[in-house]
Length: 255
Image (cartoon, rainbow, N blue to C red):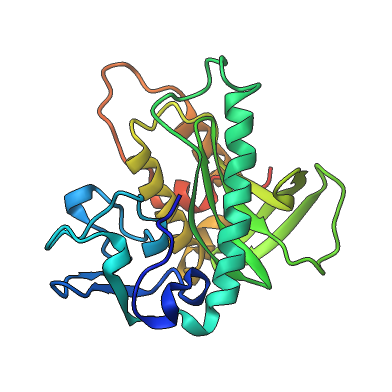
């Protein structure tokens, strides 16, 4: 749980600041910039101030979170949209964490080095697009707007991005509601840490919107063969290799 409020602007009302808000300690003026995180407490870049642990303190003078005020908030105008994105991605993570702790708990395909995490979600086409990392899969996920016509679960839909066309499956979960998923990696045995998986997920989101990648995604047969080869178990003595750009942007292309 987050600490109840903070000092300064808006009388500490948490719903008045966005995830992009840069906060500042009123004791020593040390800033907290979510884009940078906090190395002293191993807080990842991209962590909003309101998502910091309740016991987090100023790295400059150890003042509590309640002593921070708003220095700058570039996302204030889009705060309601970002708040809705946060609510829906939290629901997505909660749904798949429940699956992990339930029917997936004892299955050998689960990579115990990983946990469920929503990565680099952003507003897109009236909804929210990002990557969901889980111990048994990595999917590109689209959380559609409420007015988008829903399709039956397992129905397929091809969505065009600057880098190419990608096939999504429709589905729905209790908390998440309707969503569309495009498989990128499954299983996840090749990932040795959550950090590595998150870095690959962020690379996917970057490559997805690059038109120069379209030539690669249009070679469907070659792409399928490359993906099958990439997902094949590597020999025990094979050196570790980072996923290629083609794997990042074509892992979920329809068969």
